[in-house]
Image (tube, rainbow, N blue to C red; front, side, top):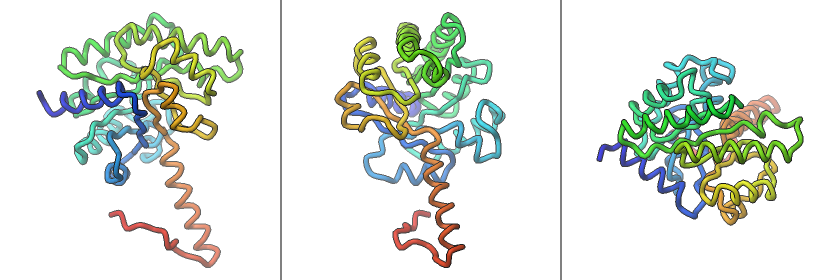
Length: 258
């Protein structure tokens, strides 16, 4: 078994285990090394928004794919942990983009459906999983549905029904897990898990999300943090600047990390 295939199987097992998998997203080499060095970190996930911001691009596939993948490759190269990458909507060729990602050692990915017609979105999932089979890896496609992300102004019961229908189609097409970003409450989460089964749903950790222990009880597979981790880091940086301007300095709690 190749190193990439071994890491892919490890990542898939982490999602299938009853213990909740938490991944704090990274965006460059130093953030990857910092997160990986923390005990109990079992996998790394990149954040497309954060990588784009690092290079001065707006989110939404504005950063060139080659540049995105170059940063992801650098992250893969500095860790022994499995790495899953946020690849947005797949840059017009989801299966081809995933094949390139596997080629640099990526063993999982978020791919947005962007609320495309369901048949098209499900076909993209099937094509990605076919690529993974051809490459010989248990690729952890975290098939993302934007039902809640784009449905804030719609009836939330209808949005939930859409998310469940789309997620079921992606699971049927071979995706091992489905990502439903948004501020979901316990009742909505329980309904999704009941429809799909445990260890199939992944969520984003944002203010208002139920506690991690409760999400594990409900059968959620994974929680990631998207651009929140970079926002936390930049908040700390801005607070340092404010303290310096106010006559203070580096906090005594600072750690020497590099």
